[in-house]
Length: 305
Ligand SMILES: C[C@H](O)CC(=O)SCCNC(=O)CCNC(=O)[C@H](O)C(C)(C)COP(=O)(O)OP(=O)(O)OC[C@H]1O[C@@H](n2cnc3c(N)ncnc32)[C@H](O)[C@@H]1OP(=O)(O)O
Ligand SMILES: NC(=O)c1ccc[n+]([C@@H]2O[C@H](COP(=O)([O-])OP(=O)(O)OC[C@H]3O[C@@H](n4cnc5c(N)ncnc54)[C@H](O)[C@@H]3O)[C@@H](O)[C@H]2O)c1
Image 1 (cartoon, protein in one colour):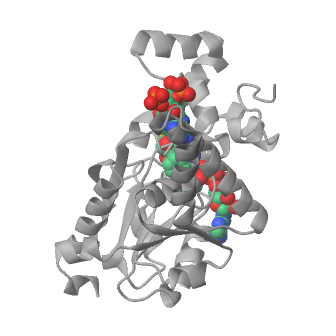
Image 2: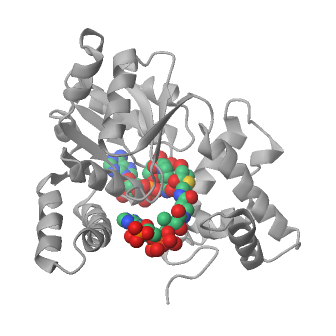
């Protein structure tokens, strides 16, 4: 039981990591954990999805390898091979969780789907295994309520692109034990990321500020006050953001932005019915047309050329 091991042994006990969901975020988490020496199993629903995850990792690792070993192709290949040696893949989440010390979930942003997954993993994983969700917006306590290991459950919120973004928000619920929190903090540091901690509150720190900002950018354009191109340029050159809000929404995925907004507007604690997070017809229409942003080749902008 987590309560039985000390801070340092809890952290040291994490050797095998299972990441469920090998999309934009899951693949990134698999990559940075494998790069840091953990044995990682990437789980997704089908061999095709796992292939997509492997491709995300390959192209990201190629960039990292080029940076590490500029003119040495053999060293680049050796680096990439070494990281892939630490990565296994599976379509069987329960089997993967059975040998994991830490399970990180990065599947679709839907409470019932996440609860169903964790309920199944709870019976399959050993007692010591820590569970973490990478949810952008759902209460960690609600997800954890599907399990009997609330003390060994926390939020581990990474940012996109995972290999590049240094921040991880660590969320503790009222039940998360000190040793679980310490293990998640030490794991984050072992990935060379900088942790911040936050209570289990909608959007944690970053998304609570970022999502209303992105929605207001959409409303500004809907009101005809400026073009999306000018809004993006303005926020890059006038506020020093690396991407404008429309570029960033396309980067995050418009389906994810919609899941977050809908969830909060329909029932997020303290945000229900708030104008600040009112769903956007423009985003709804784009998602309906499968224009999900970069990952589908089109969103606010066209990436197909
Ligand atoms: C909604 C969720 O819950 C929460 C979120 O995730 S919100 C989204 C948070 N993310 C952001 O805000 C991202 C904002 N954008 C950025 O920071 C930058 O535009 C960016 C890092 C994505 C790309 O940077 P940019 O300078 O435009 O491109 P580029 O020159 O290709 O890359 C910059 C560096 O990042 C590296 N990089 C970018 N993407 C990478 C990836 N997927 N894998 C590895 N390295 C990557 C590049 O190799 C390069 O490294 P270098 O400077 O050491 O040579
Ligand atoms: N996109 C972002 O910028 C971002 C940033 C931080 C956190 N998040 C959160 O991370 C999670 C994943 O987001 P994403 O952008 O990687 O989504 P994505 O759509 O790119 O990937 C989700 C992956 O999960 C797989 N999946 C779905 N249900 C599954 C199941 N039951 N078992 C196994 N695999 C399953 C899908 O096949 C897909 O490959 C969401 O909770 C999202 O809110 C997203």
